[in-house]
Image 1: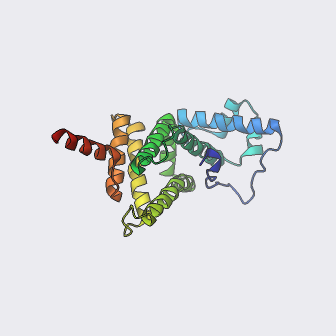
Image 2: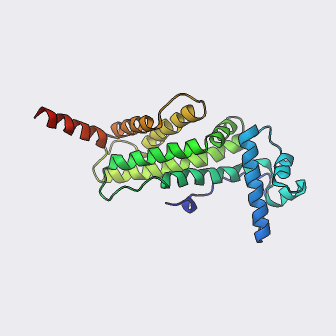
Image 3: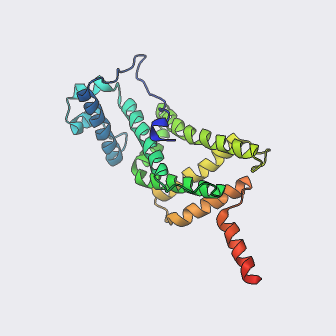
Length: 234
């Protein structure tokens, strides 16, 4: 899975028509400049306090030029959210790859570490995304689309583990993926947006242990620790 594989989030349209994507190199640069300017302003001032005029000014284009590429502030926010999701996935993929045959729990741990690191790198924008979803129903759909990608991916993994006999078949994969994903996502929000103290390495260990325990999977760190204790007593 690469950032290019991430599905586009739900698009917010002001009307029934859509804006035609730019076809020229110059148009692409202008559009990218608008998205970059919008993200910087959303992170600094929040969604409500940022206007289309502010975005155009920061991107150094005429106010009317904005509407060549986007119909509204909501629409460019959805574009920023697309890029945010790609950034999160890119951070996860940057984690060192594991050798073939690594324990399943080690792969889960790698994914959790990658998500937390990606969230940490994008905490300001993640905070804005969470806030906007509480008061704007159309932008809440953008947040749900971002979450749905991870839930569906994890549910698919859980179903595969059930087929392999590793996870209890009575567990509903969709509910499990949603609940466990919420645990990780909300923990990241509390730690990295609200500022509750935490240690990233210990957080990864504890979240992974909880994830594995919930699914009845052995956690490699606990298995290794138990084996070490047994060897000391023999």
